[in-house]
Length: 483
Image 1: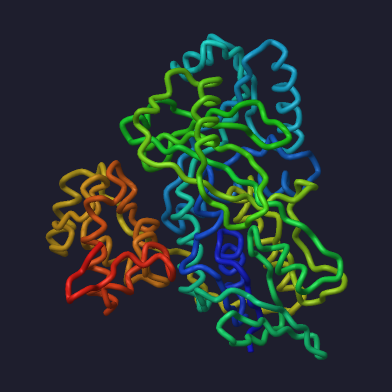
Image 2 (image 1 turned 90 degrees about the vertical axis):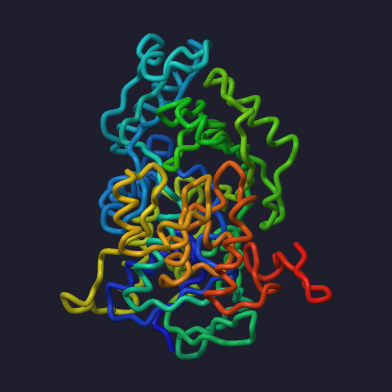
């Protein structure tokens, strides 16, 4: 018997779990994929949005601004990478300045600090590679960039430190409400979890989960965004996140540095039917390559090292759905969490947790029983050689470099495997320590990481996967391994 079962281990579900772990509740997070951060939370722009875009008075606007304010202290406590680089919304015509003024007034009404419009001369000083057609921009110094993987994993690990249970590779097949008002969460492996409360944080599947519990149905539209990721050699091409003037389909194609030193370009915005359609397309990537030139000149697209696509949980009203439906007591929606969901997640977690706490009359843990800090894995790319040498003195595995592109050592990979909720796949290792994210995209380090996974987890070679069941990497024939 659980007090709370949370469906979905993305940033919203894990932020909620962390907040609820402050209480005496017995909590379980169930996730259909093999790890945390496998859906929308892993494939997005990784921007800490300032909060000027959402409509004033909306829940989206409120939680965006609150989430931005909470993000910086959260990063300090949970030890994930974040940087306040600021953002620029660029217009390329005099007519577009009216749109910038609308965003400026909306942002001020939403409570975004220090917004102002900068014009061509100042804009060029701020961004020498700005497009020749750029006329002016809305400057939002409170915006930033974040390690989306690191944020999600840190929230999950801290929740686990405080007693939250996680179950992976278990899709929810059905929800059934008992006569006493409690719920059965029916899992794909045949197990039923009995709980007093269900939280629906299932991303692009949140309508499926909602519609199992409620008479009034909702519809989530998976909105695909395709991206190009450039090497660290291109990472300094811009210093701020550069947006186009937004449209009804979103904030347009951005050009932004990342916390790992890369340059990110994208996304597109295409509504699709399949909630698992994360394939890239020739047309989508061509659109990204073409549109980025509207705001930033000479983007070095020859430095592209990979492309990817993510899906946003779009809802026609373009608003977060958070609350307990009237016809489903004990069921709490955290649905339609699209951009700026990543930024908003600290505030989303608090809001959802407060609803659950009030419903269940949960008590807070005694002082001293709640652990609010988590130590991350040290990343060594760009670290002083003295720091690296000191770590190697303490543990010689720090002297064995496994990923040459990102300077990731055996010690870091072992930590990724053996931490709470440790990595069980190549992608799990990559999300935790960046191994495989460099220029060669795992061409050099993947076999070595596979050997470590095999050794440390006691796996057979054919059990090692890229990202969980169905993505096995090796077969065995005649006693020999073949990739």
